[in-house]
Image (tube, rainbow, N blue to C red):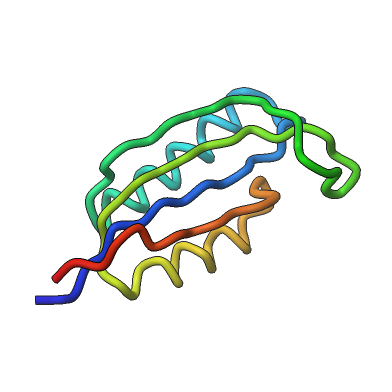
Length: 99
């Protein structure tokens, strides 16, 4: 059995995109987590002001996911965040390690 861990990930979607594109992006990552682990919760915080401008944008669409997955999955998730044009920032945190 593979080692698993509990993770928390926040990602910020470009808020200038239309609602349909934002929804598709959220669903894409939700599905990706469900296929590779267990999605514990997902919270869409919606449009919020960024702490500082990113690529001349002042707002982003924030999404927080909590999930349990094999320890090698967060690196793959991070890679996909980085190659997805709609994502302007992302962060993955290990909540706790479990066996």
